[in-house]
Length: 549
Image 1 (cartoon, rainbow, N blue to C red):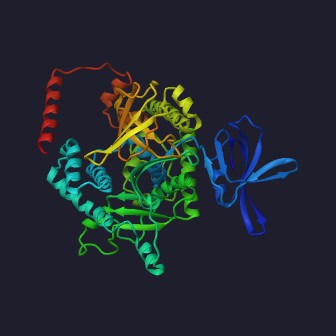
Image 2: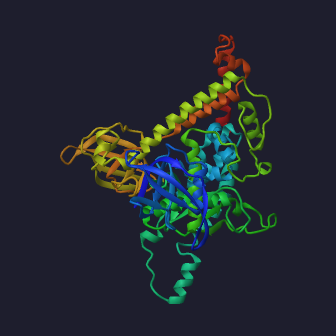
Image 3: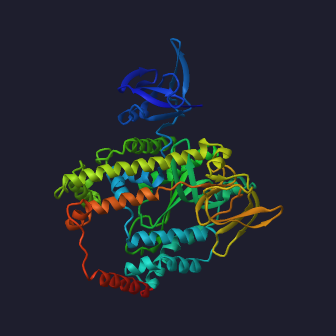
């Protein structure tokens, strides 16, 4: 059972004596059925009382497996040891954002408005992740590296990197991946158990299969993301840095545990183990570093840790409810050790924001700060509209999705074949229905249930065209992994909101005063005669970058 409703009132936390000692509780009054039901009370016990710090009337709250009882003729509920509490469950928080939030809520905000920088570590990390997926699909290492480096050629050239040096660095990182994969599908614990009982052990597809870049969406916990890999039902995350300690980094464990939470929703129980693969450990000379240089580091996932990452996700979702700006005081991060400290202080100073790290510099004019705040709120409203589209993936029936032109359903799978690059081509016969899906679109291809079934992000290659078997139009998509193609859905994307935020950040915080004078109508634009010559020089610079490769 799951209790879900709109919050009407939140009591102050209180401490009470129970048969197990003193415990904390918070009483929350809800109106179930999206606020249309009669008010009911749910008691949140122990660590879930932290929810009261950010829970507000108007937010939506969900409680799984509550205990129900009648008190003075009123039905009341309370959390149990198995309960999970979710704030704003329809707001799908990205798993990588939970990781950033645990590091520092302020860092999460800076990443959101600043976008992904065009830096070599970012580009190299993307290449290594692509190679990882190729290796899982059985592709040759050198062939994969050559193709992935070529795909990133323009970015690498603009960063002043040659293809040869990048290939060599990626190869050193990939050595950790290849070596780990060559260990086989059985772990040391599996082999020890085999030796002890000398019995035949069944490692069928449900336990031993690999899935790369697995798309995961949780309607229960309000989470989404793409796990780097899932090995025998457990999450595997790839990190291109090094870690010479025996334990994975804490925020890396948070990321993998979020995926474990979603996998548990899909498969009954969450996995009790996660793996972090630090590829740079294989590239480090043992004479230069001490400590544990093994790339793969496993860790245990218990109930307490699962609930911790969910509470972290809740705090982020509550902040996004009204698009508040975090200050950094929401977490225990130490600013003096943070590589983003200078940026954090500069942004805080320029926008007049409170920050745990402090402020430097003079604020931009009040007119520009008001503009930033107003447009920021508008963009975040747009983002919430995208999240409402995510929720329709499970709230609407397949027929309703099709009627809204957001899905093609009741497809009949006809063929799937592996392509040269290790990806898959999936074919199905359609019903002749139309939708907003177009050739070239990124869609969610599934076996009929995009949330609890098997689903993959796929690219539409063909809609209709060749017709056979009774004039049934053929649908063709390509995906990283094979699925039984029975349905394709429009996949909501936040990329427009992300890019608008980055543009807003750049316009207000990085442009010169003269350029901003034009933006804010303080002067008319002026055009210089050498504009054309400047554009020609820029094109020449891009050509130089290409020739580096």
